[in-house]
Length: 294
Image (cartoon, rainbow, N blue to C red; front, side, top):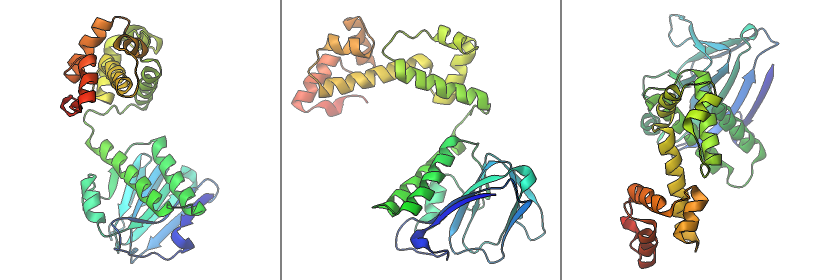
């Protein structure tokens, strides 16, 4: 069994503290692969809130007094509220890996509701993500190292986790195929690295073993825009930065972001921002850039 955990002020005692909106009290991880069973039973619950993330394997939770076994598979999180009885267990045969965090504060209920976690929710379908594990590991590290401003960093990390949960809960038409989800992440990374070159969407899709229509449909589900619009957005945003921060002329900036034809670049920029690159720069000089469509 692997275990790694950390506690605020090195205290194992759970607590309720409403002096601040959000306080992270402890966090950790268990990975069960040698021990046959790891049970947790707190009949009176805890004073704080708890979120558990099942990263791999599965876990058994008993939310009701009737002993009903709720099997929670990888890709789900579980939330417990203060003074709520807790009973759950992991089994070595399942190779269960779980991350957990305890937190308290004066505004937790409203915060959870804001991020889509209703008062009656116990199991949250979040999907599996390396980003979740990264956040949990970073929280553990922050609590262990006690660097300057670490309590604030912990709240930022937990808020980031809640934002990711909210995005997952509210995303419509999610791509639920893990392979396709990974492919779309790779496409976005490729477009960000090569946006200023000539990208042929059909050739890119073929290089990944997909038809262009299937690729475009999946990309739009994932990024809420088409591949070409995504690329254009990156180009124009970077052009805008160059107009604001450099003395390069419009033609040079167009070339830098991937447009060889300055007239075409100006036309695309105006379509995206409402004014031409030259007009945008002129407005910056006169302090009227707040009128730009961004």
